[in-house]
Structure formats: structure tokens, C-alpha cells
Image (cartoon, rainbow, N blue to C red):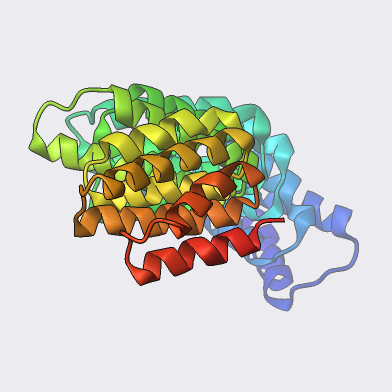
Amino acid sequence: MKRSLILAAAFLFCTGAMAFADEEAEVYRQIYMQAEGLSQKYAAVVNLAGLNDKSSAPVLSDALRDLLATQNSYRSPSEKELYARTVRVVSAALGSYKYVDAASSLWDVVQQVPDPLARSEAIMALGSMRALDYSERISLLLQNLDIAPSNDRDSDEKVAYGCIIALQKLKDPRGFAPVFYAADGWYTQRVRQTALAALPNIAVDPTDPIKEIIRTEGPDRKLLALRQNAISGATPARKSEAALLALALGQTQASRDKSEERTMAELRKLALRSLVSFKSAGADSVAADQHSYDNGYDDEERLLALQALGANGSDEAAASLREIILELDRDQRSGVTDETRNRMAKAAIENAALTKNKAVKPALIAVSLNDKWSGGIILAAQNAVKAMP
């Protein structure tokens, strides 16, 4: 009787009959439950998964519950391997059908089944069906794996990979930090690159976790987080928040050695470029911009600070540029001059013009009337005055 039932079902699988889906599902259920041994159960779920018919999802869900209940029945190495393969097939199918009713059973797989590929497939299925109730649990699982691997690094890496893929699909901001740390963690290059590629897709606005990383991590990770900030989908105002935080911390936190000093300089430069790109306005960033101009690691940082002040355009930014230009002009009148000062003066004038703020006009006029400047700088000042409203 059982053999006849299995042969009849095989015919249905081969022909791909689509009518009477509910009746078919019941037939499939009986086939699975009456299967003689694990190999027949495996054949049944493979055929079910191959139908690409969502009506089979409840049957697969029942099969998964049965597999979890009977796991201890399979003890030989070959049975355990086939059992894990069967669980993977069922998990993948449930994920593709987005059958969220099976989410609790899939999480049971993660907790109870030793095989790492089966666990990884169940985690990815939870991501595919967007089982948001499990976002935090998957995030915590990856977080724990990020901290340190167990003695079985290969197994841990397979599970971590599943977590990364799932969190990318779940699009929950809570998943950003653990995936970020995976991108910079102990894993192989394949997993790290997968994590790095997943980061922009995890949350539209990951600003809050990015800011937390910038606050708490060392220079290299601060820089990596700020790079992610630059390409995130957050609004320019939100991305400016993280850039300003990075700039402030890059100016106040001490470096332990020359390598960290260079990294912190790169952090400040990227923060300044970000503020320019996002057209960050308002008084909040002016003091930090001025600090980078006064104390920049190199000329590049100082020039970027002037650009940030010009892009800012606020009254405070205009006042800062005015004082910078007037100081350079006083030095020039006193005979203190060099190529670097000339470069800074021209950049300050050009960025002052960008502010369209009348507060800079007296400084521009002072330069235009100082014949100790080169003709190019005087002409830049004259053009900037003409550009004023």
C-alpha cells in the first residue's frame, strides 16, 4: 500500500499537476508521513520543493516539525548527513515560499540541529520570509560569533554567513552593527566581503549604529564606519550628524602612535569632505571646521576645512572665513608670506564667495586693495566682491 502511494505521488510530481491544490497537499502529507525511512522522506521533500507550488508550504512545515521531533532517531554518520540535507531542502523551500508560519520551527532548527549548513539555511529562510520577530535573535547570534570563534571555526563561519544574508534581507537597523563587525572580523575574506557588500542594504538610515561605532571604536573602525555613512541611504542632515561627530572625535581623541595619527587625519578629512558633500549648514560645525584649519595634519586638511566653511554658508561660517582672510592679509602686509599662505588665501577667498554672505565683504575688499598680494589673488578677491549680493 505504501509503495503504491509513493508511486502515485511520483507520477504527480513528474507531471506537475496543479489542480485541486488542497487535495494534492493532503496527498503529499500522507506520502511524507507514511514514508519508509529517512531516504523516502528525503525523496518526498525534494519532490515537494521541486513543485514550486506554495500549496506545498504547509506540508513542508509539518515535515520540518516531524524532522525536529525525530532527530534523535538518526544516529549513524550517513543518517545524520542525510537528515541535515533533508532539513536544508525543507528550510530553503519554506524560505522561498515566504511561509512565515514556519518561522518558529526554523528557529528551532537553528537552536537544535548541530549541522552548520542546516542552521545557516534555516537562518537565511527566516530572512527570506522577513520574519522580523527574529531579527534581534539573529543579530545577537552573529554578534556572539563576531566576538570569538569556537574550536570549530568552519562551522561558525557557515552560520555567520547565513546570519549576514538574513540580516540583509530583514533590513532591520539592529543588524547593522553585527554585520559591520563581521566585515572587519576574524572570518575568511569571502565572508568579510559578503558582510561589507550587505551593509548598505541593511537599513535605509543606519546613522544611529554608525554613530555608536564612531563613539566607541578605534581609529580604523571609526574610519570604516564613516565610509559606510557616506554611502548610506540616510538624509544629508542625518549623515552630517555622523560626519560632525567623527570630526569632533578626530580632533579631541589622542593617537597612540604615528599610524593612528595618520588614520585620525584621514578620518577628519573624510568627515570634512562629507560635510561639504552633504552641504552641512548651521553653526554646529563651524568651530570644528575652524579647528581643522588652525591645526590641520597637512595642507589638504586645512583646505578641506575652508571648503566646509564655504559650503556651510551660515553667518558663523562667514565670520570665520572673514577672520581667516583678514589675518592672512595682515601677515601679507607685514611681509610674512610663503606659497602655503598664498594657497590658503586663495582658497579662503573662493570659499568666502560661495557663502554669498555680506559679512565677508570687508575682508575681500581689504585683499583687493593690498598690492602686496599677487595679481591672481587680488583678481580672485575682486571677483568675489562682485559675486556678493
